[in-house]
Length: 178
Image (cartoon, rainbow, N blue to C red):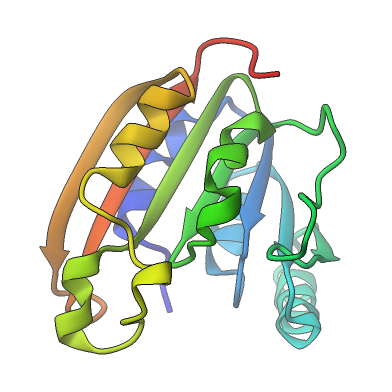
């Protein structure tokens, strides 16, 4: 599957040659895309097999991607204090208890690119559990509450790669988030 058009459109906002985290990376389509652009990519997911496939793909393309199996829904936040990246990418994933913590992974000037399903998406099938669907303006509220500067935001229905209702956020960390 090709990278999200949202990620393609806004990846250039991440500082050049910077460090990027693909959070809950799944198959790693965005990790591969960003590595091809010259970013130093770390891809994390709970699925060890998906990460192994990602490593194979990266090696076959001559790309270096650091992967890490990580429980992103465990009882404690899995990141050490002070861990920061120039960009954080999250697509098709929501674990609401840790949503407010994700901006803490951004260095000053770091860019958050987030795209996932909204409650309106339930009409199209899975995911349909409201725990995994964004509420109205939820990403915008996240950015405002965490002191991020919003560069772009959309709440819409898309048709490609398949029909879905999503929110999309591109925001920059403008202050130290402790």
